[in-house]
Length: 358
Image (cartoon, helix red, strand yellow):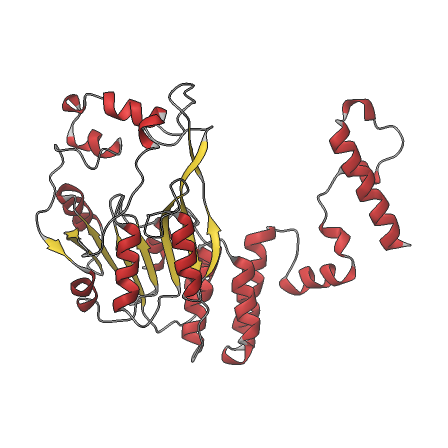
């Protein structure tokens, strides 16, 4: 999940202050190679809080993950299947520098770990599970409602997404999906425009999206990492899209669970919004602590508290413009060293500040 933080002050604060959260956080990860994101490991420090279910067809990876994580992180080596027709537009991949590099790599010289590190999951040299499982069978194994659903299966993603919501009537609050930005207009293609329409029809809001660019092989660009995948230049090809659906909160525990998740997904403003909207559910001292910590996550030490932040906002919203030293400088600034575009921005900002302050 590309939209997650690596670590959260909020989680550390909740743990250190012994704030109670007696509800389960259930994560269903379909395509779990690489393992759970670090933030979910941190959440494991909240006693009896998280249940993690990971599925992948890579036998070796599932064996590795099963030895690394505690018993409430469960991993299954299964191929996830669907009866729906899987529609993918593969025309673009062969034109990418990553596609050419991948096809020409002699992976017979690679060790199993090197094959996995270089993202050759589909290689014949990788041990793949022959056992199949469908969404109905997966969901029957999970005792609690799923809160976070992640799908990253490199192919049947859109079909599996439709299967999930055809079976499961209690929607998860968060859905993280790998999406494809390129492809035709067919309504069943595994493309972002189809996924986005499907999710919004279910009442979800798009909260975050990443963009992985791929260069054409006729003018290759630098790879972003040491694998034959995204490049630093190129067209938008894939990304991770995060969807969120607000809940009706019955308890402070449920509210804190979603505050923690929103913060983990770098949506601190949305976390503050639901805290305030449901203020009657939570003790005022805990609410203040959480709001102050969210403020710190966004602003560091610039504001003493959430109250201080909002007071500054209400007094003069111009204070939230980017800080440009020139705005308060004397007439010794060498404007000849500033680009026209930046100079115009500075002048407009100065004029607006003068209007507001007059």
